Image (cartoon, rainbow, N blue to C red; front, side, top):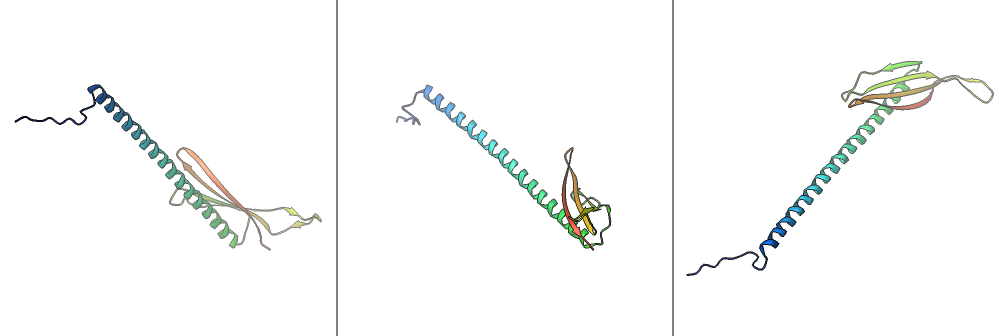
Length: 137
């Protein structure tokens, strides 16, 4: 009884088998690099989305602070709020505007409201501002 040895690639020489192995290793390396590059791109996209969400939240909070301040009787000055849960400090500044009309008459009851948000990202301090003008007779 003779045993028959099956060869997977009977027509391929030993040298060609080594070349096929090299091709497979190279393809695996390229695939690995592509996967790592996609992971890095995905991380950057997630970071950008988080930053956009944070910016939108800050803009909304600035608008809310201005709306709240405008409902009260305005007097010139500054009001600083305690940091919120994310570490953002909000500040509202009210100032009387000295504006004149075409006849050089002073326009009373006009105020400028400026809301400012300050926070730290790493070691860098960032800030955003929103400003409106309000008339209160």
